[in-house]
Image (cartoon, rainbow over all chains, first blue to last red; front, side, top):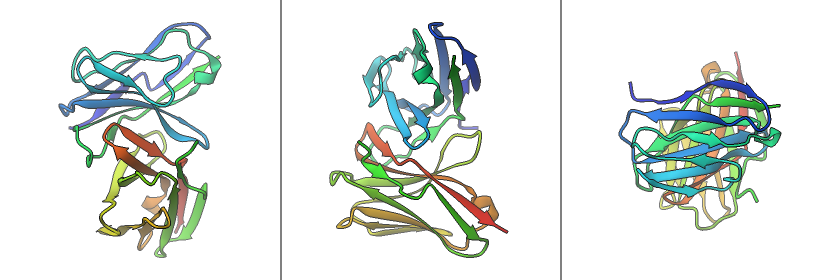
Length: 113
Length: 111
């Protein structure tokens, strides 16, 4: 089954404790991205990657890191999480090209205390 | 600065009637528009799209209308079904790695 998977689905952590949210896709997509969803703001892009070893900032990259060492994986790293990073996070992937829709993972709900 | 706006946070319709979800945008460079549907505890899923060279696109019960002069698009669902109850996100793109989403509209279809 073609899908984007994220782990963990739910995470409660404390300020300053480094964490990684994994994302993996099995569709051989070049393009992958991370979004956060907050009430009243919709989905905002954090980082995206056009291909292996190619990443770039989205609209809200502060406090996040990413890496793209393999085509299928695109982990999101929070080196020192803060309460304002409490949010619902989605990973997505698509075929490179303008008129192609993104496929989203099921989401990771993160709470930073 | 929200370039894509969905001004109605929620909408409630009766089963069998038409649902109309609206979306406004400010960036005249947007060239591709999409609607995504999201159920609780799931990621958004693609529903329907339209490019700026068209003013209408249909897929079964779903039709998207684009009015470029008004910078407005709408999603019509006819007839509405209880299974359509979800949050609907409007999205717009000006180039490949950029997609802007609205805040979403929660649709409730009552039996």
